[in-house]
Length: 87
Image 1 (cartoon, rainbow, N blue to C red):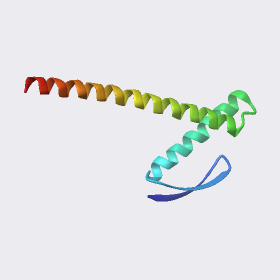
Image 2: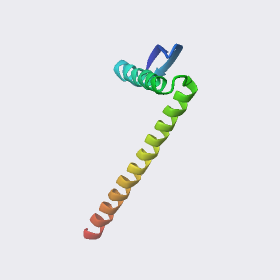
Image 3: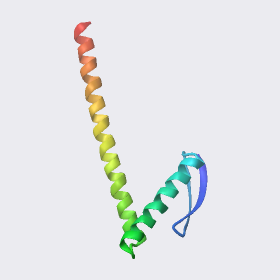
Image 4: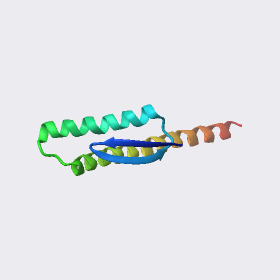
């Protein structure tokens, strides 16, 4: 695990992560890009609004990942059943 020290939207943060530097920098760039996009469309959007927006996006991604996992698991179970039936 690496330790990172960043300034994101004016906030100094330090954390440890298993991600590499490029991935962390990409995530930082996405957050800052989204914040600027929100500010340019709405004027006075706060960082809390951005945080809420990003959390909703993450929650949606997590739900979609769970659904995809369940679908894959179901297909694997069906294939295993088929293999067992033919053996």
